[in-house]
Amino acid sequence: MIGTPEAFTRSTVEREGAAGAAWIAELPRIVEELLTRWECVPDGEVMHGGVGIIVPVMRPAKGSAVLKVSFPHPGNVHEPDAFEAWGGRGAVLLHERDDERFAMLLERVRTSTLAEVEDGDEVVRVAGRLSRRLAVPAPAGLPRLQEQADAWEAHLERDAAELTHALPRYVVDAAVATVRELGRTQPDVLIHGDLHARNILRADREPWLAVDPKGHVGDPAYDGGTLLKSRALSLLAAEDLGRAVDRTLDVFVEAAELDRERVRRWAQLHAVQAAFWGRRHGFRVARSGPLLDAVTQFADRLAQVLTRPA
Image (tube, rainbow, N blue to C red; front, side, top):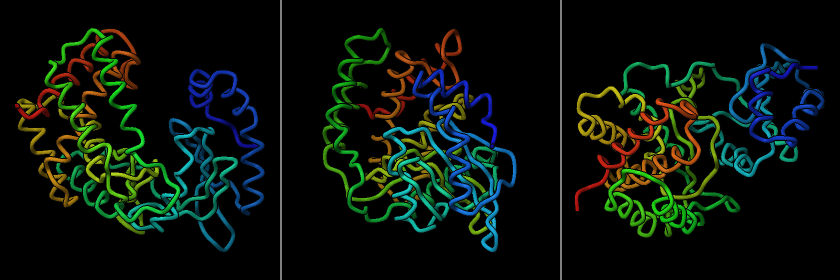
């Protein structure tokens, strides 16, 4: 039986409670059953992400792969659908899937991520090129981002009214306008849905391949907003935040071949949502205390920088 990493066990139980503990208890058995069915043997140390474990494996006569098993959650349902639609184009290949167990057998790539690249322009450029390649006609049955628009607007208005914050009203209004004008009618295009540098890994078949997609259907510019939000900590040290943000936008939209204004607006919405989210829930890098205050205040600054003057 494989061992479950202690940090993963702890975070899963803390987040999911009794359901998480029960799933963790069953996880070794689930992995063993899948290894047997897909004729794999473990071939390395078990790794983990936020919601799943990764088991490096070997398949006789077929070579290396990884077995990924995720905690059952609605956000993980359409990951294999996205991989199937891409067929290895800009993303890892899907070899096998077991939707009931939220499990996949995937192409093995390296463990180093795009986040480890020091050249910020190169990080953004690689992500932009992958974003362009992943934007393909959407297969039927995948969740449409436009279906979330009503909830986005309601949350923005509720947070603005209930939370103590420093966002000027025009910044919140700009985010609401993006939801109304871009959010409710979106292209029928498959996008990654959670594009950031840690979800792009070095590979051998191609230099970089995407992992961990949400399998959303919507505006490819949405992924540009996700990427820019994820670059926030890298922008924190910039002497001129406005210039650094403009540079990031310019590099991304050129590589992704997208409309700059649409990417800016989605990025502004993401920044406002992050500023409110931090006040309610904290961030992965800071749950409380002075660091949370500093990151939240930076989210406020980023949101304002991304808001075009009326």
